[in-house]
Amino acid sequence: MAPHFRRQPISARHAFALAFDLAVRRDAVQSLLVPFLLHAPWVLAQGMLPAPDQPGGMTARNLMLNSVTLLGDFLVSLFVAGMLRFRARSVFNTSATTQPAPVLECYWRGLMRLPWLLVTELLRNSAMFFAGLFLVLPGVWVGFRLSMATEAAGLRDTTAVGAFSRSFELTPGRLERWLEMIAMSVVMVLSILFTCALFFFALPATSWSTWATVALLVLPPVMTIIQYAWTFFYLRLEEIDVPRGVVGSIASVTGIVGNTDTGRPDSGGLSELSGAPGQRGLPAGSGAAARPRLKLVEGAGQDDADEE
Image (cartoon, rainbow, N blue to C red):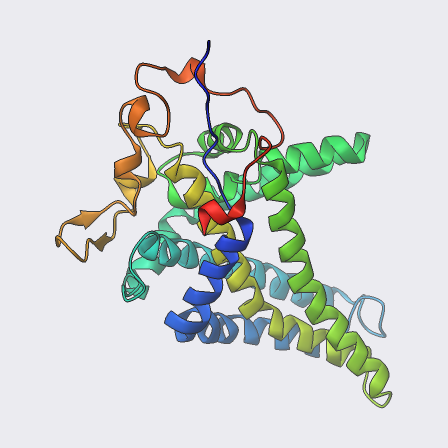
C-alpha cells in the first residue's frame, strides 16, 4: 500500500497576523510612515492636476503631467515593495524580539531586483489580461498560477522566466488559500474606499476628488500590510518546498539576519526543511515523484490551526 502523505499546512490568516505584527508593532515607522511620505508628493501632485474629464484636463501639458505622476507613483510602489519584501524576509521564522534588517540594506536589495521585478509585473499583468479576454476562468487560473511570480522575482536571484517557473511550482494545491489571500486583501482595500465614499455623502460640501485623494493617501500603509502578508505567504510556500542546492534559492540569497541563539547566519527557517525527502515531511526513501498530485485545492482535513 502506498504511504499516506499529509500536505503541509499554510494559513492566509497567519500570514496577515504576521503582517500586522511586523507593520504595526515591530516596525511602524519604516513600514507605515515612510511609505506614506514617499507616496504623498505624487498623490498630492495628481490631486492638484485636473483630471482628463475636467476642464483643461485634455491639454498636452496636463496629460503629460498626469502621466509623469502616475509613472512616478508606480515606480515608488515597486521600490517600496522591494524593500518591504526583504524587510519581511529578515524576520521570517525568527523570535518576536528580532529586529528587521537595516532599512538601507533592504532598499538596496530591493533596488537591485527592481528591473526584473518591473519586467515580471508587466508580463504577469499582460498574461492575465490576454487570458481574461477569452473567459473569466482562464484569467483567474493564470492569475492564480502566476501569483507568486513577483515575490519570486523580488526575492530570488532569477529572471522573469525563472520567477514564472517558480510560481508554477509553488501554487499547485493552494487555490483555496490563494482565494483567502485575495479576499482579505480586497476587503482591506474596499474598506478604505467605502469609508471615503461614506464621508463624501455625509459631507456634501466636499468634492469627490478630495476624498479620492484622501483614499490614495491612506492606501500606502494598507498596501504595506498586504505586501507583508503576501511575502510571508510566499516564504511559507518556499519553506515547505525549497529543495537543497537550488541556484537562486531564498536561503542562498537572502540570509540577512543572524540566528539569535547561535549568532550564525540564519536562512529564515528554510535550511532545516531542505535535504532528503524524509526531512521535508515526506517518508524516507520517497522521491519527488511520490508527492501527492493535488492540483487546485488542498486535501480534506487540513486545518489552519496546524499553522498557527
